[in-house]
Length: 82
Image (cartoon, rainbow, N blue to C red; front, side, top):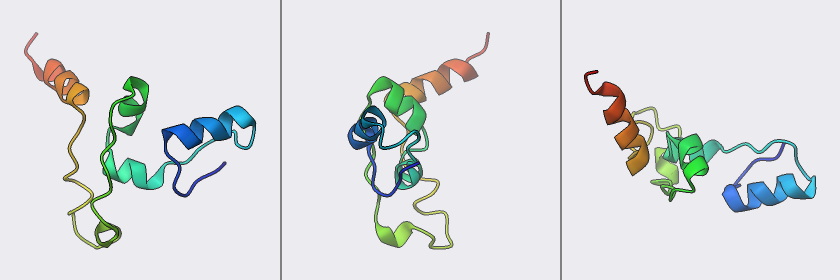
């Protein structure tokens, strides 16, 4: 397993080269609560708001990152009456 600063491109390279079997995306998950969907769709990623939001003891930086447009559409579709 590799981690610490990996993005999609260098994570894919690590897997393809055999350097890793697994890639950890810590900060990317904080900044992109829908990271799995963004990676699947090759959607743009949010940038981390700033180091000061990590482990700050508050909600800022953990609950206020925007979701991707596709994730928003999917969420609306799921909440629509049948």
